[in-house]
Amino acid sequence: MSFDLHRPATVTEAIDLAQRFAPTARYVAGGTDTVIQINRKKIDPVHLIDVACLPGMSEITETADAFTLGALTRYRAVETHPAFRGNLRALVEAASVVGGHQVRNIATIGGNIVNASPAADFVPALLALDASVDMAGPNGRRSSPLRDFIVGPGKTGLLPAEIVTSIRFAKLPARSATAFLKEGRRRAMEISVVCVAACLTLEASTSRCSSVRLAIGAASPKAFRPEQAESSLLGKSASKESFAEAGRLAAEASSPISDVRASAGYRRGLVAVMVERALETCLQRIREQDQ
Image 1 (cartoon, one colour):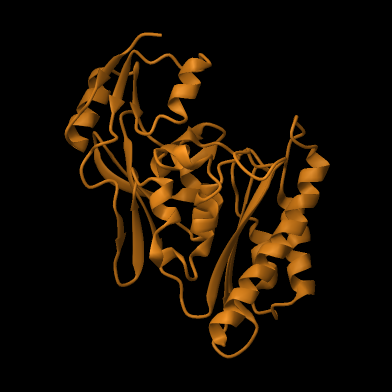
Image 2: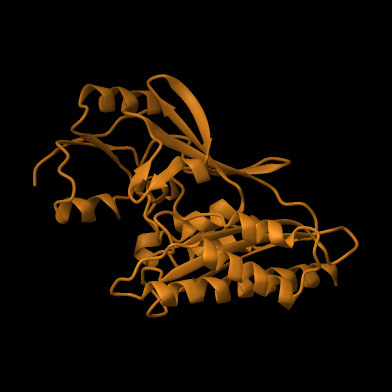
């Protein structure tokens, strides 16, 4: 294993290096995914462009109506951010199960998204918030909904030499809550068998659902939103029965595989149960807000 390491001082310089050394260059930040792929000989870059210290890309920024996570934000920063302790608790719950403490201290949100693993824990939490991905490249800057940005296992919509700069999502309205659940073969440092995120908003004075977003990981070639399950709840009372029906529809929309961790049938069953539980957790959290 041999490569040249470059440490650009700006995003523009990083993009210039990626263009100059294409197609043998690769961006690296925390390295928790890239180094493993190199060691397993899945990739063999001649040039690594270290972007870990690029300025302005590791902050969590709050405005009146939105949050922006710099692509170099570490999971530990999300896990401990006070603004995510309320109705954005799914972010904390997802961040806290990404690897161990050492991994969360160095792994970046942008790097994990670009890795595009179907079982990435944090992606469903962002999908449930309808997040967007900001990118910079030779042709300037652009944005894409996260649900469109990840194309398939290990594949994204990044163009040559482009780099993810940030991830954005809107703040939630009143009477909203989020939840994230993960099922693995052990309690910690485990790849998900299935993971589920939910974002639920109730009408101002009733228990009817005014907005529902669900996201499923490790049950399809990429994390996905089960749209039929979401729409089945709109305008309906938030109840165990309606949540169970949404879980059933989400399971039908999934296309899991069988592997050493679980069978496809078991994963599909988990989707149904976990969607129902995630929605019930959101409902309980909204009730706590109302008290």
